[in-house]
Length: 628
Image (cartoon, helix red, strand yellow):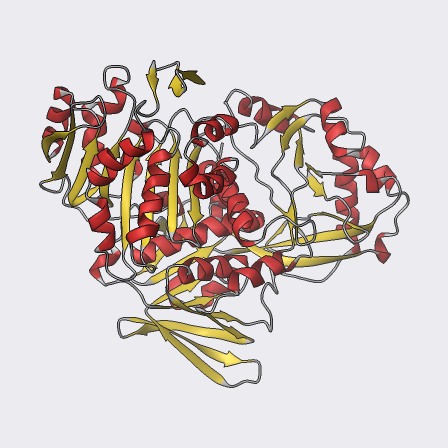
């Protein structure tokens, strides 16, 4: 909890201030920016290069904002900044706003950070700023747990800024400083405001050559230095593949698949200056499972530490911030109406009770009883559960179109890809267009994002991609159902009316590849609605399912329900098997692929990347871990 002491933000837990009483912004510039020689290093970056800063102790975000401002001021326009930071006790929304209020020179950037801050989730968060030029990866975690999850040899400069070593010794332990060194590139620099002897000796033991330098304000000395030798000679990434530096940064890419997974990957690559050819066999984007008239931003959190749970949690926070940037809330193509997950069965009640034992940001979720749930929804409900104030719906085809609307993305619609083979140092996709004419595209890298049809390509035949059919139902609004204000989820979901129609869904038929509309599936959707929200179902009155409209589409899944996201071969990547979660998980998956392809800081911890990686396959099938 944040307190104030003599006008300064103050941590009651650690008995220390968040920044210097003399001037926090000037302290940051002296100790961390100048101490790491960042003004000169940023200015000297080559075109389209990237630099990665690491920080222990995010605090008020002042260091990040100052580094971002400096980067914008002196770095080449095509360069990119990755900023990794760890914070185990993040400030509340209003606390962060108050702590940053004095720095008017940083107001625009502070406002952008605060907009993202309300989307934070426990664990790893990835937010982009400045059109993707600046990327913040914030690990809300213990520093000793977070640092080993960074790839070896990633960080160029460190800002060691935990509370005073005497008051927070765990932040400055030998294990933490060894983790700092392990994640550093050879020659990486380090700077910190403290000159404590045991911190200096810990850095030296970790491999840094350290010197004392004039401190800021009342502090006579500080420490700065550089990594003399690499702490670990391995160049493996989190999923066991070679660093991209071994073959150079890609200039071109071909992405196969024009649904949400493919459009997200193309968008992430284009933001890094890569020329993308996006290939889709249909005549328009989002023709398959991504083509529903509306889709919900829905995540079913798990209470355990399973990698899938961690991925879904990170993906949910990411998709809300990502949509803020790409498809802002307007009530037409995206609505932030909130979402209720009802504890309408023993399993759900148990899961929600387990989740209640953890601390969650109020902006992320709230535990509500049946009375509160009914008030939020505007209709009678018999169960309480989880309230997600940031939840809502989007029109997926509009999201795909927005993602692909980039001069660096060339669309090839109506182009069916039949083969994918190596071509020199890159890859060649080839097939026929809608008129039967042959075509081919060669690129430095290839990304396969086309659901179950991916197994037609030789490098992906070993993966057990299973079709999963889903059907939604459109129900005309009635006087009673128009009162519904939020999405209600149980064993299915019902959206508030838009354009006079509610969307209710969805069936889930594993192994079924049909996309025909079925009256029986409409009946199943209505029966489930009656189970978790009977008063709402009654509000629709008698419905003849034979007259209802809707949409059926086919997704794909994998054993264990863990998506396949990562490197298949040198220069070949995939984002597949997202199943019913695709609208939430595809955005973060696209960011993962772009980072792997360019050798930049990934947005997820190593353990989660390893669980998603295609390399976790045996006997033609991915190992299916049990999900608690």
